[in-house]
Image (tube, rainbow, N blue to C red):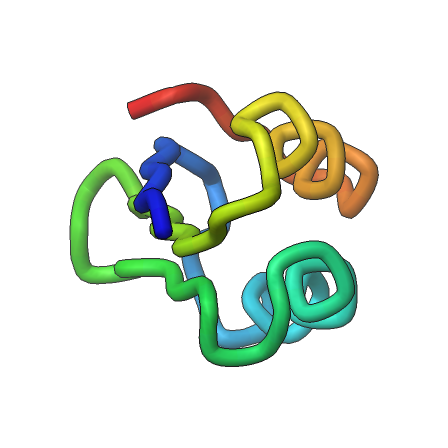
Length: 69
């Protein structure tokens, strides 16, 4: 398993709720989390099959900004 981290603008519970279906589909429930207390709103994804590009595309399709941390 590899751990990927990204800076995002996912900054509240409503934002997390919006992106949850996409991230659950891509990474699986329980394999990702967003640290909204961190100023960079760090998204951490644990996966052995997803690439950083796939995760970034999924989050961008949900309407959020994302970049490699």
